[in-house]
Length: 81
Image 1 (cartoon, rainbow, N blue to C red):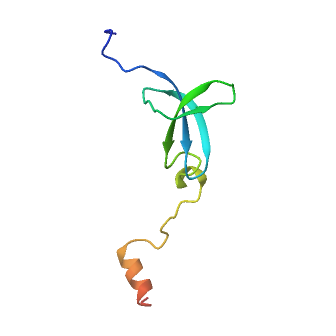
Image 2 (cartoon, one colour):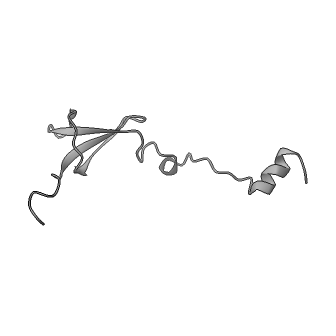
Image 3 (tube, rainbow, N blue to C red):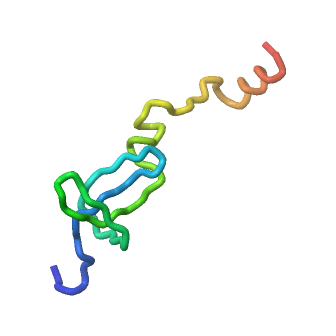
């Protein structure tokens, strides 16, 4: 790797603001905000709106359309057979 052209890779804490779920991982993202982690060290804090703890795909609470296609929805809406 060339020196001086790559961003600094460091440990950061990501905080899911919708579920208050936190996880520590490596990233090149930086933040002025910091948090003390369970190991006693201080890490930059990155706030995110969605993570695996709150995303419908991972939580199993996704909304699935079981009515079929447009024709099926039309027939259901107007009580047609």
